[in-house]
Amino acid sequence: MAVRQFFLAVLLLAVTAADASAQRTKTRFDGIRDCERSGRMQFFRHNPNFRRFVIERAGIDVDRYGDRVGNQFVSTIYRGKATYEAAAGTQNVRFICLHAGAGRGAVFVYTLVD
Image 1 (cartoon, rainbow, N blue to C red):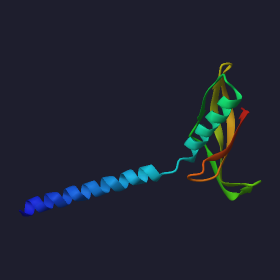
Image 2 (image 1 turned 180 degrees about the vertical axis):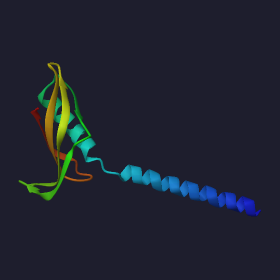
Image 3 (image 1 turned 90 degrees about the vertical axis):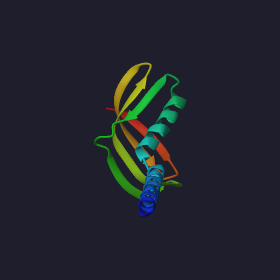
Image 4 (image 1 turned 60 degrees about the horizontal axis):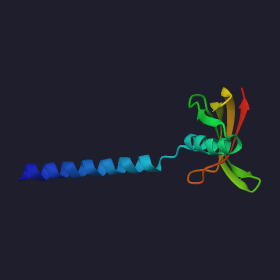
């Protein structure tokens, strides 16, 4: 009987720990991924031959800003290198992304040819 109660307690603890881990994964904020997504939508609207926009995760500068730019709140500025690909070919670019924070998304994504 005691072995069965112990087994049930361990099982309950494992389920609770797995549930807490899943919640952390769901709420974790990835602003870089949001900048990529916003950049892809923006670039596709302006260039129908656009294929992909990928931010290089290594070497990204993250500036915590926390102020307004015009009438839009910006919490973080991301800067770094990325790859921009369209029908004309692939280009290495530098990007800047103004991000409004968790749940709000990227406000502005801009690229400059490297």
